[in-house]
Length: 199
Image (cartoon, rainbow, N blue to C red; front, side, top):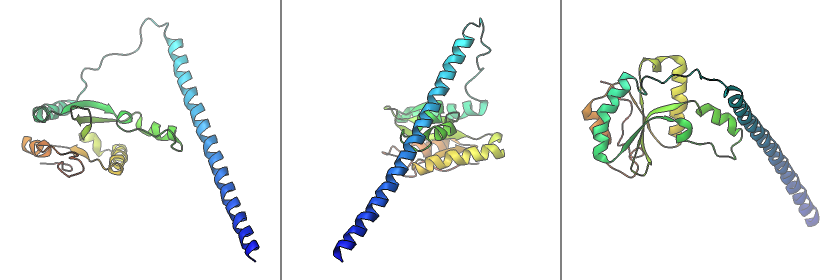
């Protein structure tokens, strides 16, 4: 009787291990296909550059400014405050440079594509370039349906990472002083910074 029980347990364990092994093989195959697709995309981009490099002139012009008028006003309001705290303000940081997709993530290329073309208006860092705050200055475009979906997606990313992304439609110097006046090890996680501000 004991022998039958042991045999049954061995068979069950074998089936479980076989299933896990099959699942791992499937995931590895999918990862290889994704890496192949990524390499093909890089090759295609290089081929495109080689194809176009003979041009005497490329169809690009310099942007008039990196920031909108509202973003510039916000920057000028925030800069003196962050300077006193020893913080650095970075403008228009790409989301893919702030967060990353681990290499072993299932469908990693798909998740990377979701963030590669998005940016954050302002990233506030300490002197070691560790993130202190992420800020979006919301204009009228944030009321558009597609923009709301984008904002919800980005908000959820930082909510999952336990980092608060601050949204400002309007602001006062007093509010910014309050938001950035206290130095803590992680002010975003200790609610020094507040949610969306409106006046």
